[in-house]
Image 1 (cartoon, rainbow, N blue to C red):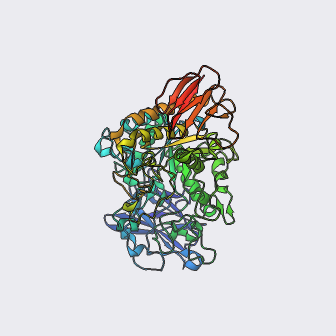
Image 2: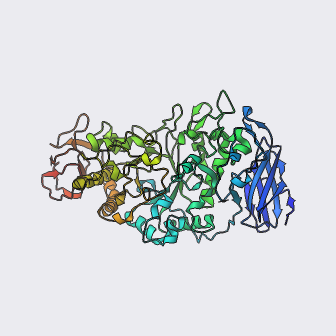
Length: 628
């Protein structure tokens, strides 16, 4: 049955059900006409929307939640001036709250040439959602940065193999909300989960051809819609809200890794699915010499033009905070979003930090992209935190070959790098790169399973195999001590630490340092290793707060004899505070430290030693903390 369309209102953008019908609104400046397409019982019904400025809108009385819809845009096909309007191509509403289905890679989606083939059979549908939900008084935990420990995890990979989670829920939002999952997070002591992308994303055509998938999710299709693939139920929005509510009840914040810097539509030959057909010249950055091509600083075919796409990005962020109650965001390739036509200025992030809805959220930047002056560590505005790869490299280098020249600065908060204090987000491992286990097991990456002839992934992991490549049970004690020392250095440094999910379970990826395309046991957490390393990591996270409370005085750097260090740190060194002492031995032999005067007692030792007098013997590759 065909419904009657009224003019509706131009705000808010997207599809909004009010109990009696649905208001639709979409923005497109170059369009000469926009059709709303409803799909039901195998039929498509089209409705011409009304224009107000650059917004096209209409109201369908009697339409219920669950309706499937798309858009068709009439207007100029003029790639030389950035326009790619083609009414033969069904488009996804960029404000869609949920999608149904996934793209089918067919030539009808190609955007290089004007084509009259209808793309509707190959494009997902947007779905009208029911906004009602009982949050039962849910509140943001608002954990202070000083007390925060972030846990980076993949929704599917985290619970997919956990035998304590019901099989039907494993790998889903509901699986992450399950008591067994939350019990693990609480036992570990982390205060926030940082989820790899959960915006709707696609499995790229080249991966499907290889029999692989886009496991990590850095290929966004829709900025408002949660990924269907992680839902155990038909109502993905409701399930995600239940997950957030459950985590908040446990005092755990939810941070999203968001990819606003590019989309899955790729370059000028890539698929036309949404923004490209709505207002290509607005949302993407054109090549300076040929507007039919894209300027790409992301390595993914296109770059979102943040100044012109600002309202879309801000509206998306506000939606996830106000309607889905998430607590913060980690911005992938954040330098791209901080660019204007002159270069990086960080303007969008100043607006985010000042926004009344967003300003109390945790905001984290990955401070680089692939463009000119792309490395912007230390240049993002307050109160943002930044992924500090210099910390990662200094700590890895230290335990591989001796203290890095900048190790002291990294352990004390990287104050030399940041214009505003406490901005460093420290990590030793992340989803991109070796796991903690593999970092002490492999000297070389093993990425052949990715189908790229081992050319992908970093070739400079600063890893150390302890003398034998791959698994070797004879090296297990040394490797286990190195893992504990690496974790301890991460947790005892000033700044906010981030732990990679599975490191506490001794997870291995078999030496693959770029498993972005493997939705398999290679990437999923192995819960059979729920043992000593988990117990140590849990104790260490809780010990961190006790250690930082004692960091109230300037640090003094000593060698093993107790003498002040004047230059670079030696292989064995101590950081002396008024009431605490951090001992580090990066060498291959035990070292006997002369201790400052006082009645010292051992609070932590990654080798398990507890005997102390006026001297203290620290095992090779060991780290210890003493209190007085």
